[in-house]
Image (tube, rainbow, N blue to C red; front, side):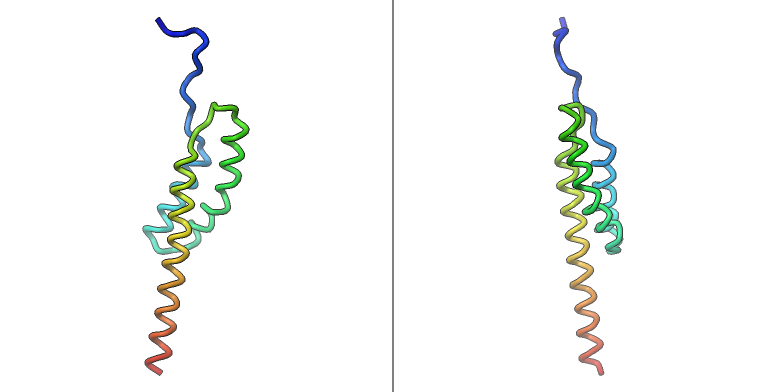
Length: 91
C-alpha cells in the first residue's frame, strides 16, 4: 500500500533541459553561441529548482550543459588562436 504522505517524484526542470541541449549543441557544432546561452541560462534554472521546494530536479543536467558550453568556448578559442597563428606564420 502506498504511503498517503509520500511526495511524488520531482519533475525535471524545462530550463535545465534547455541548458543541457544548448551546451551539447554548442559542443557538437563548435559554434559558441549556444554555449553562451547555456551559461547565461544556468543561474535562472538553478534558482527555479531551488525555489520549487523539491518539486523540480535537474541540477546534474545544468552542470553538464554548462560544462559543455565552457568546453565549446575553450575549443573555439583554441581553434581561432591556432588559425591566427597559422596565418601569421604563413605570411
